[in-house]
Image 1 (cartoon, rainbow, N blue to C red):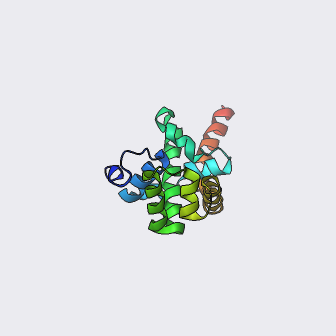
Image 2 (image 1 turned 120 degrees about the vertical axis):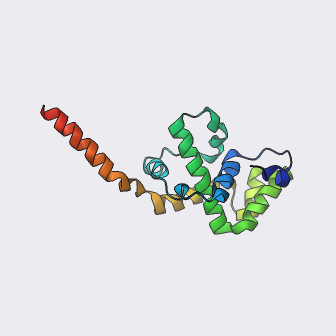
Image 3 (image 1 turned 45 degrees about the vertical axis):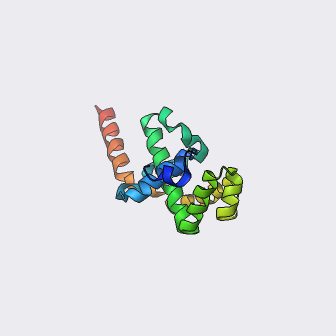
Length: 150
């Protein structure tokens, strides 16, 4: 967060970029996999990236998902388009270019096309990750069934 003004000046950066970069460069391991993101992708209840600008108005669970998505989108961007793609985006924001023009320069795709590309990648790689919590659901089911016997 502290470096961003040095790159883009006083221009407003989409929150998903700002938060995603902060999380990515913090190096925290907990953001690398997300059952919250996996569940959202499985149920098509993910938050469109542009809506993450309103994260401060979200309830806790929705905000957590927004931060996971932000990290995931930045991780994807850096994995596919490298630091040069990210620099192109940040310099485009600094220069007050339209978001679609920025993304076309950085990725060859409009912002919406980039978002679809990222979502398709995540759906393919994380869609069923939520099943890793299956044992938790099983215990809850067992407790419910035991409670119904009494």
